[in-house]
Amino acid sequence: MTEAMAPAKEEGFQPSILAFCCNWCSYAGADLAGVSRLQYPVNVKVLRVMCSGRVDPYFVMRALELGADGVLITGCEIGDCHYISGNVKAKERFERLSKLLDQIGIGSERIRLEWISASDGIKFAELMEEFTEHITNLGPSPLKGSATGGV
Amino acid sequence: MDKENVKRLISDMGAHDCVECGKCTTVCPVTRFNPEFAPRLVVVKALAGEDMDLSKDSDIWVCNTCEMCNNMCPYEVDYSGFIRGMRGEARREGHEPDCTQGGLLHAMMRIMANSDLPQKRLDWIADGLKVAEKGDVFLFVGCLPQMDAIFEDRNLNLVETARSAVRIMNHIGIEPVVSPKEKCCGHDLNWAGDEKNLIKLMNHNVQVIKDSGAKTVVFTCPECLRTFDLDYQDFLGDFEFEMVHISEFIARAIEEGKLKFPENISISTTFHDSCRLGRHLGLYDEPRRVLAEIPSVELVELEKNREAATCCGVSGFMSCNSISKVMQMEKMQDAKRTGADVLVTPCPKCRIHLDCSTRDETPVDKGLVDIPIMDFTVLVDLALRGELQIPDVQDKEAEKEAEKTE
Image 1 (cartoon, each protein chain N blue to C red):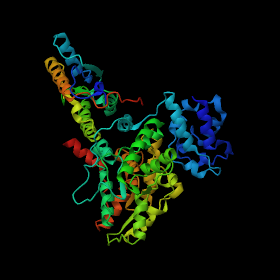
Image 2 (cartoon, chains in turn purple, blue):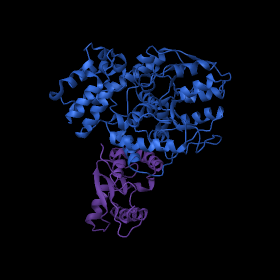
Image 3 (tube, rainbow over the protein chains, first blue to last red):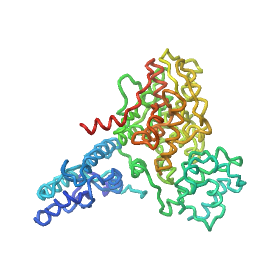
Image 4 (spheres, each protein chain N blue to C red):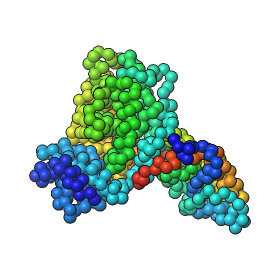
């Protein structure tokens, strides 16, 4: 293994993190963080979906396969879902996916599910800060550079 | 589309021998419910050559690769081999199948193929199970633990199949090798046209088995066995180790007098010939011989059995649709009609699909399809321990109601 490929906490490692945000709560939370001019790391790429229930485990798996270092799924608080129970479904799927990731060796610590309401701009910024640090400490994804296309 | 490749595929398939008798179409389970698809037309289109670019055709993804047509063809045209080859061509062109579970399983397999992550593959080993790191017999567990995680909400407990296999082997004094380094066999990727990743998985798995020093590899999953026996050996030539399905292994042990079954409650079973075990590998008698040997177990044949057995509806976790559902309903009704207590399947994936088909609302009356499904290996293990019992049909709707009220 060449030095450039050496994993773990190398100097200047900037993780790439994908955050799924639901249209009604957490994306509005991200918006609020923005208009409130709260600072959070640029490593997080926000992807808006209509509901956290839309996030198929495959999306997360595919992001990891393509070399994402961490994936965040965010949605409305339980009971607050715009579509009544989308976040409940997201939670079920997340639990199953976590088990699968542990089994195949990627590790469930690289993904996280959080509920953020539209008024939680501060929570959003703090979470991004904290998760980025967490992933930076974990080091680059073991799958970085191994992606081979596919579906 | 690479014309040379397609030419080679057509001659490998033996399409030139086709006399257009249409027998393939009459037996095709997909054609029965989807008149737009016909195996004969696939051959005709293939022979039409350049004018017909099959790689863009949806036909190649509709096929269930159950090999009913291959079996029926008097001129031995290899339809499924051609379909598999064309899928590879289609993939090179950027056409993709509709995968079930959104493609999660295929992504998992690709990740396994392209990385060497430390997997947790052996968490299922329970107390009292004796396994070894090196030895003569290797038990290829396959993706049972991963499937259990993916289908966790369905409580299928697929790893019990692996536990049962180990228990049976322990019973005859064998401590099988199980390896945490094993990876998926690549069956589903292969049938989705992803040969590149299949080869990566193949090289890894074959090396793991060679390193273990095993002389016999036992499979509980017909798909893994098919991939090793037919596809891997196609690439690498004949292996030095022998590959057997658990039913062959048990049948042999019975012949040698190493397995004796105690008295159990009497139970009547019906056997589902999975396409990989039956038509692909030709193993019809072994599981039946084993079932006949268990004193209290009676076997009632399905109306369509052996070569004529109908499909579980989905292969390689691709194209699960309304046609699959109709096929599954037919299979389950056939099983229920036999009056048997339980439907026995040798294939974990058939179990997943058939269980799925009756889980939610069914297009036919629930009473016509509610027969419990049991894995072949688990049944043999229970019989061997004298603990055989008829499993309850899970009252899935009541279960759901209970969940709701929680």
